[in-house]
Length: 114
Image (cartoon, rainbow, N blue to C red; front, side):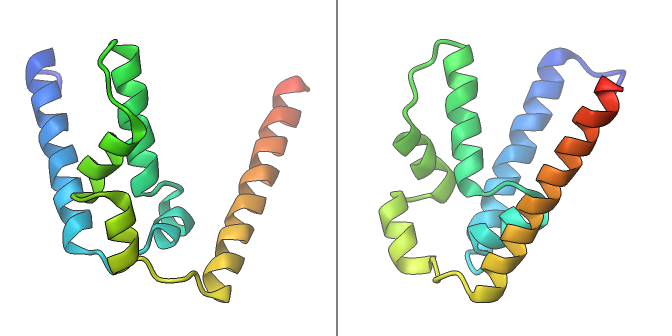
């Protein structure tokens, strides 16, 4: 990526983000909890990141508008149509992931203060 301009990099990153949104839209069966378990982010995280990026650039964007962009429809509609209740297995896997993150974070803090 050394031989591309900053503008080209931004263009490529934007295209990749749009492709990610299309991919998520084409795979509505992949639940947010599955994304959180596997990758530690979900569609709501993408929405929050968009709002944060907008805030940093003084661009007005509220969370619901960002979610509508990410989900391709109002979140309440997406939730009604596509969101399934989390299974006990999913909840246990998410809880395990969160616990592992805490342990890893505590280990890093301890090793940094040594």
